[in-house]
View 1: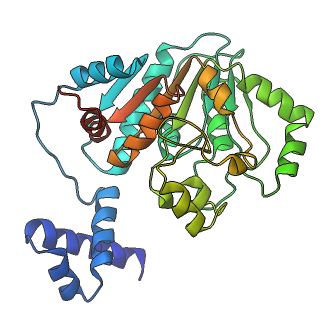
View 2 (view 1 turned 120 degrees about the vertical axis):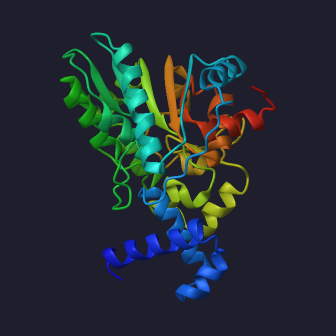
View 3 (view 1 turned 90 degrees about the horizontal axis):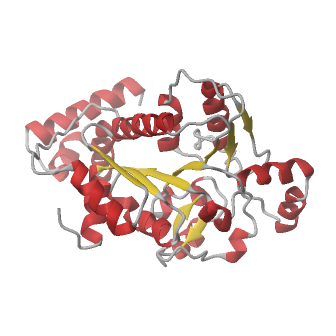
Length: 319
């Protein structure tokens, strides 16, 4: 099926579902495809902006919700953006918000940490400034994924942000995970790596993506670092991902063996950064956000309305 045919099918299925009020099962029978494929095409129709769903809710107070979450979790900053539009558009809005925030907190010798992911990518892509900070540094916090599906790699993001700030950047010339822990130790002993991690240990602010609690969305599984059965087992215990670390709801590392293969910021260094901004959208990030907060790694949040509602509900908080 060509991309043009696929798009036509998305539009046809969306019209049958939203205008014709047909069930997904009825559409599957009419179109001669599985119900799961109908579901997937409807989701993609939202992602590509073919379908745009708007829920008018004049009662949701973004500023009040942000203040409640900020006080409840003792965070330095919480900003909530609307969830309207496709997933890509929501991430773009989060990116623009993060861009404004960084612009307001820039200073001459600032050291900025960058993780990886599509939301962090939206932030870097949207960042604009009229300032030039030659004494500043942008630092890659975790190694590269080296996977075709992982197009928002930390090295490219660090480089892109540094170009916009006209400052230096430090790339971590290593994969996020290596198969042999001894190789990881050797890489960590290299003078270039030591200098890089010296910068990491002195970051002023960091922008990190917040991984899903769904193992199929985890970087370690999608990039092929562990098999599906191992990913399913690990995530069935409530594990979430932050900067490559697999942590539980209390923020504790759950797989020390896997951590021994990771080349990236330590949880101790992450917790020491004065301001770590977690960025994400959707209800499937709730457990991950809580894990990052309970571990004292996240000091701020820029999230969408759905993530905020999910957090409020999980904590029993009322607007």
